[in-house]
Image (tube, rainbow, N blue to C red; front, side):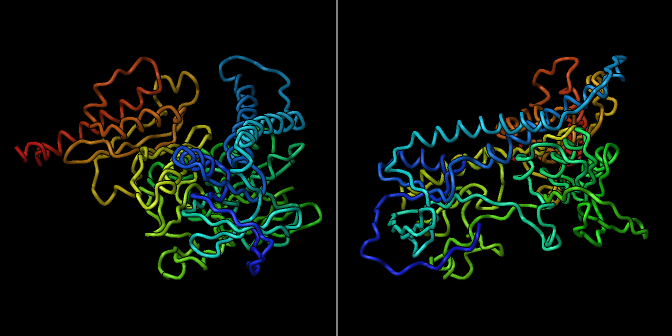
Amino acid sequence: MNPEPSPSPPSPSSPVLTVDVAILGAGTAGMAAYRAARAVSERVLLIEAERFGTTCARVGCMPSKLLIAAADAAHGAEQAHRFGVDVAGVEVDGVRVMARVRSERDRFVGFVERSAAGIPESDRMIGRAQFLDDHTLEVRSGADSGTLSRVHARSIVIATGSRPRVLPMFAGLGDRLVVNDDVFNWTDLPGSVAVFGPGVIGLELGQALHRLGVRVRIFGVGGLVGPLTDPEIRENARQVFAAELALDADARVTEVVRVAEGVRVTWDDAGTLRSEIVDYVLAATGRVPNVDGLGLERTSLKRAGSQHDRRGVPVYDPRTMQCGESAIFLAGDANADVPLLHEAADEGRIAGENAARFPAVQPGHRTSPIAVAFTDPNIAMVGESWAQVQDRRPVVGRVSFEDQGRSRVMLQNRGAMHVYAERETGRFLGAEMVAPRAEHLAHLLAWAHQQRLTIEQMLAMPFYHPVIEEGLRTALRDARAQLLVAQAVTPPVSKLAS
């Protein structure tokens, strides 16, 4: 989001709209907030700065999965010989791959645009909004942003999303620097790409491009791989992905510079300087919440001094999405918390309901955390992470998928899983994994976490044979064995209470 101009002085000709709820941003969180608020109040205004359509549909979840699907098809054909099936002449047509990505992407975006078009015109506005105070917005619209409107709202929801973060080291790369938004507008696949950031976006796109024949090298910092916090699982993931493509999770890059042929990247490889020239640098180094330029300094949130974090994001209650005691609510990627579509939808719903009922604010329903990276194998996290539970000394149930039956049958026997259980009660706390088809394992575990099941209760559930879920059962059995030992020494809370 570009810096916004300072508010203009009031003009007698500037229209003033009075509504119950104003919502800034028409992405996943904003649309959910609108629907929730509209169910309570008829005076709701949805303000979108540029164009209707979610990050997920345009540049996130859906186009990335389209690229990954093509990559999986190419990889499957290339690996078929391992099953004794020879597929001759496998070729990747980059033009056709990207044509399908763009076409299907536009189809998904069309669904969102049609949904937005169904909102009454009186309830929506295109323009860039700035706060004048806690209840007043100035909105600039029109081709030259010269049309000014004032909006007075009893409460306001910020759902302005986020944008890719571009590091200063990439200055001067010009059109050779791309972010994930740009990738999905390519009309052909490049010859080579250096990916900076082995997080979810970097790993997903990096592996997909590699499998589609692009020369890829991924650079990371501090050994981080995806969102994983468990050192053993993270190291397992690093080894799995490094075995397939060039991944340095703790790179010491010394120079990134534009040259005639593209971009030259130089790094220190154990004391030896190495260089490689690539067509593009893909910056996947995180995202920045779009809260700068909103004029938050003119609200009570900034004047209070301590009610915002170092990124300028207002401090909010994740149960209600309310910022302090104000009439301002924050939802979706704009709060820089959990940038996932289903979380944005939940947050938007809670924010919209509370904004419409303000000041009668109530905690909303939040589901158990679940996150998936659609790499191969998948990376997944459920419930509480290792970083969140390690100080409580949980029991850790382990399984490796290298010898897991169904995984070996499919030649997908890579990865490992840890499940965490409360030592005193046996309650399932969370899990981290890099595993085949972990997207399905993660859903099972998220349901178990939300139901607050114990390891024993989870093991009482049916497990079919032969399925990958039997690997989960192995991890649960390992956790149970440790719990039996721990509870023999320290009786569980229920026995102590009796």
